[in-house]
Image (cartoon, rainbow, N blue to C red; front, side):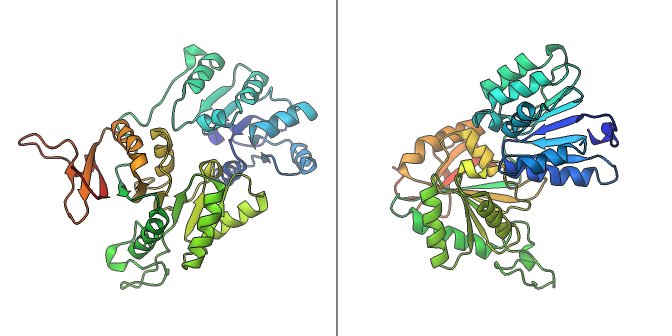
Length: 372
């Protein structure tokens, strides 16, 4: 897109629109777009909710080439300021599945109809819900529509390790604290073992410095976020909480604290985590097991990116077992069990004679008290 647009156009009208489901993702997108367009004179404009309409009117008056927006605020400008999208050449829907989940379907249709038929439309999505498929069929020209799937062979990275740890509901808070301490003692996921450092960022044996490990913990509710923020602070684990109804200033402050390394753990709900991108994330912990396999893929896909190593650890209770089995079927992996006191897991269905189970294809639930 940047290569095609090349430079600023004096003709009035944006030539590209990038839609994001959240303000955080839009702000990250404009940051990356600025880097990509560094050696051009393209003008970029951020249009998101929570920011002053007047300041956005001023930025729009400078005739930007690329608009990075959230759908609701863009439609607001189309109505209030009669913003035209008739010169748009590129229309990008980033995290399209999330856009639908967050109720932007009507706004997306409005924006799509306001652009010329000649524009190129690109939808990026981690999953393909039926709503998204219907939207693409209705809004895109069928003779030029092409689906490019990157998950045909696998849905999670080959460099991602999966841990499933069995615990009782009463023991889950203590299990989380214990797990976080264990992960901190491992250092960051991509540090060389000979130079790994325990959550200090100091130089190792080779003299190299390693950053402290970054961990994101998914919990179900705002109440849980606040509870664990207090608990982890009491046990000496630095953390930053984020939940959906949190004030934008507080969200930005918490995110900055985590990114800068002042907090080693980010506590989030699924709603709050949408659009948050953390470079070099080492560990993902599912305190509350995801209710769907696709949500699991969304969560663990935040680590082990671009060939880097990563780990996703899930706390599993008795009530979570059906979801765990469903996940194994979705991932095409076998379920393994490792009883308390045992160092060796075994497949839940047993092995046929002469058959060896690939360790990478075996998802092991450790700490099972009884496996009769």
